[in-house]
Structure formats: C-alpha cells, structure tokens
Amino acid sequence: MQAAVGVGTSLLLLLAWEAAARAGLVNSTFLPSPVAVLNAMLLMVQKQNLLWHAGVSTLRVWTAFALAAAMAVPVGILMSSYRVVGAALEPIIDFIRYLPVPALVPLSIIWFGVGESTKLYLLWLGTFFQLVLLVADDMRRVPQEYVEIAYTLGARTPQVLRDVAFRAMLPGLVDNLRITLGWCWTYLIIAEIVAADSGIGFVIWTARRYMKTPEVMAGVVVIGIIGLVTDQLLRAAHRRAFRYL
Image (cartoon, rainbow, N blue to C red; front, side):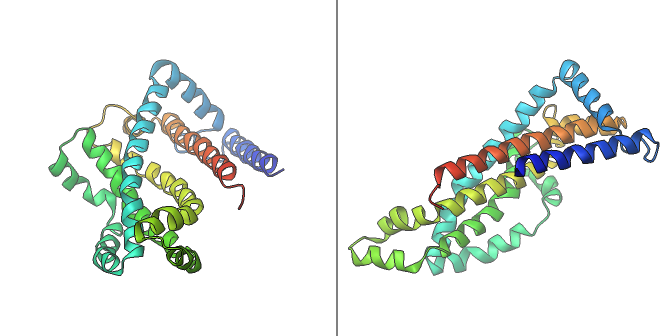
C-alpha cells in the first residue's frame, strides 16, 4: 500500500511537471521537461558513458563511507564509554563538523593534490564527524541494566562493550549508517569538481558549463535513483536482520 502511494504521488508530480513544461509555464532552459531529461539521459548512456561515470562515483562514495564508518564506530563507542575520551574529542569533533566542506577544498588540494585521495578525503570529511556523534548517541541509549547484568555475571569491560553494548546498539547503528550514507552522496559534486575527469559530478559540472540543463538534470536524477535504490535495499536488509524490533 505504501509503495503504491509513493509511486502514484511520484507519477502525479512528473505529470504535473511535464504539463507545466508543455504549456510554457516554465522556461525549458532552466527547467526542462521530464521527457527531455529522459531523452538526455538515454543519449548520455549511449554516447557519454553515463553508467561508467555512475559506477566511478558509487565506488568513490562507498570507499569513503566505509573508511568513515570503520573509524567512526570505534571512536563513537569509546567516546560514550569513557568520559575522558568523550571530553577530549567531542569539542574538536563539534568544531570540525560545523565547518563547511566547500571552504576546505583549497586546503584539501594543498594537502593531497588533485588526485583521487582529495576526492575521497572530502567525502570522508562530510561523513565521519557527523557519524561519530550518532554512534556515541546510540551507545548512550543502551539500557544500563544490560551493562550491570553483564558485570554481575563476571564479564569484563571489553566483553561488555563487544558482546552486550554493541549488539544492543546495532539496530540503531545500522539505521544511522544508512542515513549518513545519504549525506556522503550530498558531497559528491564538491568532491568531483576538483580536477576530475570522471564521475557523475564531473558530468554535471561539464554540462553546466555549456548550459546543457537537460544533461545536468539527468545527472542529478541518476544520483537520486542510485540513492533511492540503495536506501530501499538497506531498509529491507534492516527489517530482515532485526525482525525482533
């Protein structure tokens, strides 16, 4: 039922958009019709290797996200479990996560040059500092009685963290990973305008330079489709893995 409502609403929006474009209510230079965007997308698949560019961008996002998650999960758990660690790191993380990533592009180029490492760093930067605080919050939500029972039964701190607290926080953690993966995608354009010659961001930026609005919209739509499919797959995996919720 919910899927049908979602599909129906999306179709109605597309029909309204197409009708407005055909009626001349919007300037096609600034907002091309859905049909024009679809035609541009098909042409880009055939002649501009759009699917290959999408694969490159997906690989970059997942690589940076995996690195951010691998670092954020243990750091977040330690911040929540040990007050000294939290007191030491939280002010620094709060400071950095409010910095706009575009403003750090020049520094990133100075530090890493204009290669692949800069793109991955910018994607990581937009994800890690947000995720580590979400992980710490998930850890704080673990019921205290779980921890107390584990200590009563003779468990040591590493065992409590690994076998009790981590498993209790896992459903919320997976959900937050899904959300922050979407945030990582939002920094893709910023990452791929740094001396890039591949990726959806590069395609969009090149099309913008020549005012090819249908191609710009096509690139944006591709990102949206990838994000929607990924999100739905992760939601389904979450429901399957945590049926007891």
